[in-house]
Amino acid sequence: MRISEFAPLYRSTVGFDRLLDMLDTNVRPDWPPYNIERKNEDEYRISMAVAGFGADEIELVQHGTTLVVTGQRKAEQNEWQTLHQGMAFRSFKQTFNLADHVKVTGADLRDGLLSIDLMREVPEQLKPRRIEIAAASGTLPGQDNRPMQISQETERPSKAA
Image 1 (cartoon, rainbow, N blue to C red):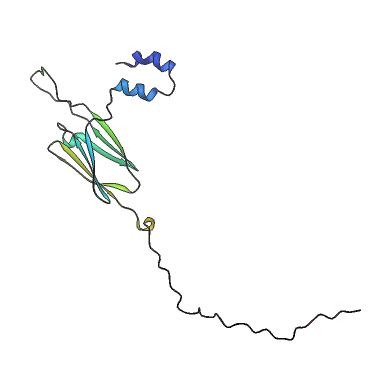
Image 2 (cartoon, rainbow, N blue to C red):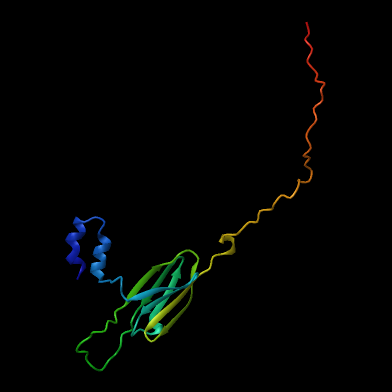
């Protein structure tokens, strides 16, 4: 599809430009298929099926809390003609939004499966900490808990006539 085919729709729709751009560029948000796994409390793994892509054709970029995985297949010079192409070797771009303090610790491409290891590393200053409460076993230094004695003689102001 060409942009010119959607030109009348662009004029009559407001706010649907992203949807029309997706139709125009033939982007599939579910391609390539992937799993997100939780290994333990602070470790995660993203596994993506990227059969046919080499390690030099895949790029991982983490910018803040966004992880972008991009695959760009290099053109092959074949001597033969493909009569049927059932395997999809199209380029892809997959974006993952990560939580705060989640970092990529490693990536591995084996048997057409890209594994991206993630770890949440919360700085010590931001971790919750338990504060001990001291129990009072007596009086505080400098504090006198004896009752105050009030003298019986109270001075009354004299009335001047």
